[in-house]
Image (cartoon, rainbow, N blue to C red):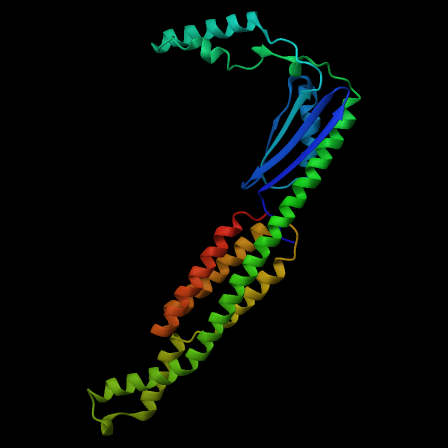
Length: 291
């Protein structure tokens, strides 16, 4: 089953006078690139949560965002003055070394972590919340996986349509190839007759040379291998986590199409080859988003 590498999932739970929001988002990546954005009070659980998520999700640049909303009236914002002074002094020294402008240092300081604290950040962590948080994460993962599956179904239909088009184009190549050999034989013979009189042509030698030449332009094996690769692509689409494998198969499909185009020596077949390449490129573009 094809799954998309992009995905989105969200879960919200309400406990002890606060609302915990969990969001999962992912983009394309060659491997698992997991980034967690957690409230400060959950930082001690980050490694366990990272391991827990990594076992359930595969490739992708995945962001997990957890934020808390208090249902109670917010307390006034508090400024961590000692941290502000520390950030400011460090930035001032660095600016002096770099001979840089110091007019916006305070603006930069207030963008630094933990400078401002509000009710959302001063809520005390209860160990029992961990169970509820994991449930919220599980719900978000379930929603996230469904999103990936739904997107994967759309991609699967797209691939099937593109592969069907290449199948039809291959059938057109088969019909043209039968005439190609006859036309090639006649064209070569007519060209020779323009130079050499018919009585002086050794028919046996001519047939031997013609067979040798036609064998070099024969695309029977390429047509067979192309169909085999197309069949294999469709079969592989049913396997889990097949993105990389489909990528390799598409490369093999491309090789056979290119070889048919270079060996055919026929304008009609080469025109079809261009159409095949166009469909294959559209498949490759979408394969970048397959898990």
